Picture (cartoon, rainbow, N blue to C red):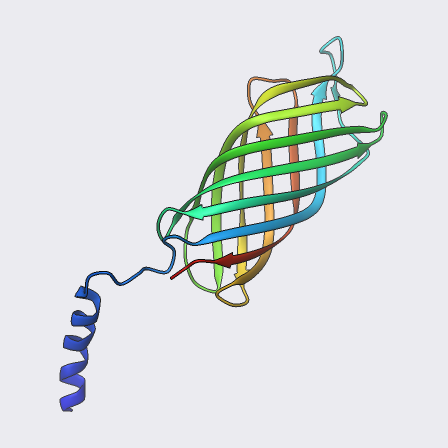
Length: 176
């Protein structure tokens, strides 16, 4: 009975000690992902929308935690498409990630701004500004490793919209 009365007091003292690191601050992570990709762009006369028959993407990203829930992220996505001629895109963005929960399953949303380079197929060689929104769910295997699903949608002041969905693997360090 005496232990039950002391336990809340001990917890309050432990939480009040200054300098105790929270789990996310200073954490860094590197992620790699691969999956399906597609695009939509108007034809030369702006009459119909062109899409590929098939597409694949690979990406790499770096994150640095600003707190438990928020991180900044820099990433690069490269995609190739077939159908209507071979085409490719490369997307580089920087932005923020917000983690909704920190349990075994960690849903998140992110937003980034950057540039989309495109060539081949229906595209004229060029670079255009891009806004990327995305999200996914990470499944924690340990404090340092996770895997999950990810999806991103890119568009902005351009005529090209890209979408990708795939599997992601992440390695973390620096969380203490």
